[in-house]
Image 1 (cartoon, rainbow, N blue to C red):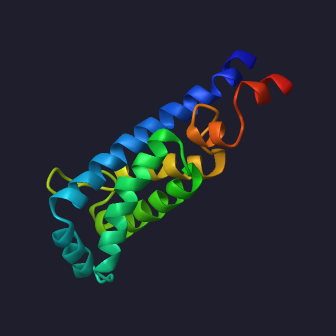
Image 2: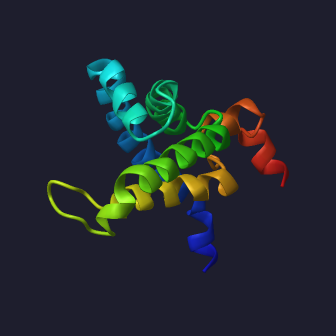
Length: 143
């Protein structure tokens, strides 16, 4: 079992990479392919239109931060809130699975679970957060 414990940084890296790629892809479509249109869609849900811009940039830039493991907990928190609102306002009424034309909330829920875990576990040791706070070789040899 200790062998598996030593692989926890690798597990956190896989979680970060999966969530980061998903969020960058979704955010990229919004930021570079129809930011104003997305803001109008958000306004049609009864939310302020400016939250559409915040959501788009949180997905894109938050995903980039999570990919490299920089400000991971803050970025994961922003993404978690973004996905929570997406589930609540867009996907919840479609059910867990939904239909091809009206997706359910299963995908957003899985991504939100990854973000939630990263809020509490952080980026792990294979991340910029770890390197920048002095967690290089010397720190791990001292413990």
